[in-house]
Length: 194
Image (cartoon, rainbow, N blue to C red; front, top):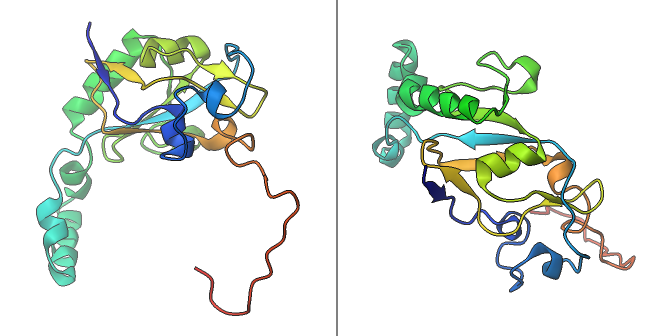
């Protein structure tokens, strides 16, 4: 089985894109030696669209609304712009072969929607399953920082357009969002803030 690299999938891409020249999380965040994680993560695998929406998106507002209304009326909106059922089934089968638990279903059972229509398959990854799926070791630095070094890869039997990590505890509050202000306060003038 060969593997496919997910572009821009380092932990530093996730939390610090373009903000550091460090090549490891330990160096970027001045951490001690890497320690294997004991934390389970929930991860969304976002599947490719069944059809390219460019023509729809390039139309004017009225044309888009009319096309979307027609697709919705015919019951084909999500089968047109969601993932193909074939890709969805092939991906879930490949995940099951790896022994990776799939979370949720089309109704949102358990708080996660997994369906071809949503283009999403939610999985629950122990550190061992993280390695089996992404070919990287999951490391932990306390309860709020779970990370990996290098780009993630997937078996070539799993075709994804992207991934998303359920927020807690993947980046938590340390170090990517730590308050490094030293207590500094900014007084903002009345008015609109953007």
